[in-house]
Length: 503
Image (cartoon, rainbow, N blue to C red; front, side, top):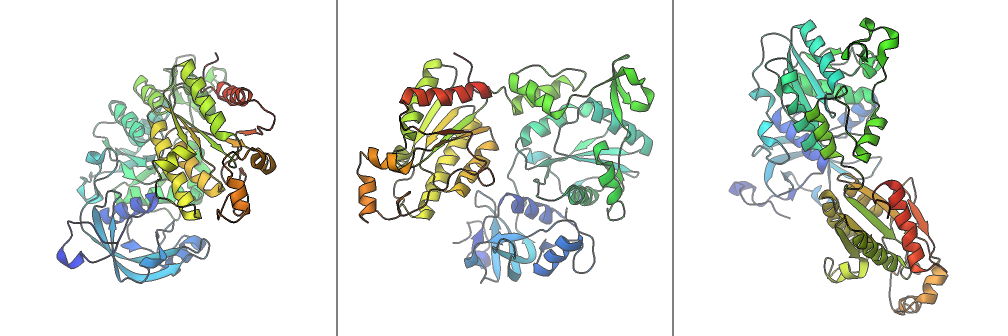
């Protein structure tokens, strides 16, 4: 594994590595100087101290581990080129420590970074700025670090707090969620509703598996690096903000509660509204229901431009991209049901349908792969990638591989769910029935030892598990079930879920 071209001659022979999504974002923020005092990825002792008490080994407050996972074969090198997904070299890591994570047993590298070039991947890169590229105002600077659009309530609270502090405003859209482009567009759309001089600077900070306190602390550290003197939290974070007050690098400000005054039809502080005039807020669940059905978002809740971006990010279910992923033993009937479902959807019209059948994929997309576990996983990941792209563009992808391993199915679910919806159908026809049908003689060959690593005979099939792959949305045993009946059951599920209109 060698680094891409564009490197100085002294670095061309170094091994190269492309970090994962979170680590790539960490790399960008480390190189930008947005993670002070960190100069690189943390070692085992610093990581343990951060996890245990939210401080580096030297006592400096820091809320989350910033580590770099690598394949074991890279742990013997002194220097590593870190590159983006397109192979563009971004930095050289001088390895200070190679260590094994005690929880995952995966390998990590620690050390300082030598920047090679500024990252240039991701949406709205033209708006991104290093902290040292921003002009610092003379007075207070109030930051809003958010993964959500600003609706009328939040806009009012923000203006009120900024006025009270006499502060300029810096909006930091936190990228790394499911709909980064829509988030940035929605925030740009309300700039005229914000104080003069408000800046919008996207920051690559994907969600992490940390508690609310550490998440808010990380936002405060990043905001402080960008020159903010205060960070605005949500009113629901009042308790969290109070708990972290002593450890936050800048004050975390919680706005007073606001509500919609139905009498005068404006948002304002609850303290100024008669109790019987307070209109119930549109909950996240109710907002999702409106979007799923394609109904308009009320103007009193959010500006029209924001509502339009919400609709783009979450189209009505009957227009939204969808992957229907069948899994089951060879001979279970999944290919037959999948083909029948594809035909039924085409006949109904209104959706673009792509069928990714296991055998067809094996001949084309995954030609050359063996039936080892590693290659079977790679085959499913390739199917998942194609299905996710179909889903991203509003189509329906119907997949019918065996997909025997729950962890790999979980990867596909995550891949697809980032861009659309995912339905898992377990075709749970018993092994005995699958062997009885054995038109290709595969089971007989497997039992005779002619075919090694055959699912259900010499290799396991892991049934869908809610704790691992999210579980099956529908379980089908096709024993004694006509193909049309099986197809109708899947169609009923899709109609009930809103993805397909009733016939």
